[in-house]
Length: 257
Image 1: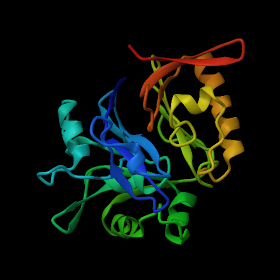
Image 2: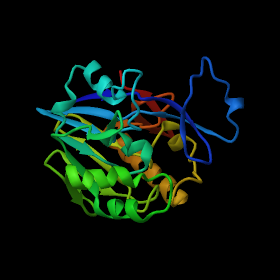
Image 3: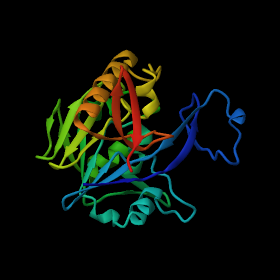
């Protein structure tokens, strides 16, 4: 199994929940008061002969109007047209914006040959939740044009791909474990978005249930250490993929070589 980090950029996010590009070399964080600073990085996985995308980023374009996500996939040596599965942890805009591409005011599917895999409850919540974190125009377009596969609860999507309904970050958030018999790759979405939240036993105010999210991170951290999971950190700043160890009750994470 091969894993590729598709770094979309660093951003500041304030109370308006707008994602504004942030360059640490040229931008001053003091100019963006009361902001959260995050990285955004979907992941591309080659599993046997199948190309899988996990979450889709913001869907921002470069100066030429090309989807940054598409450029990153090409830079990894693949064609975006060959993506067959898009696995969605949840549908907040910073994870779902890249499901579509706004090209000169016309919306297109970013991955027209892929099946988009979404929790049924998350899909229904996305249409009814008043939060600005959800962009219903994206979901309206998907409903009319995309191949969607709705799943419920926890189970196996294929022999190699398992999903688990966790809630915690959103009521219907889910995580994925990919196991090809040799490697185990875990994607915790926004329940395990970066290593520091596991190491520091962090409770986030932006989670639907912050305490449950913290408890789940601890459970996943223990399993990751026991079963040698390669963990993917969607918002990781210091480490984007890595292995967890547990010693004397303390987690440590080493970047994958």
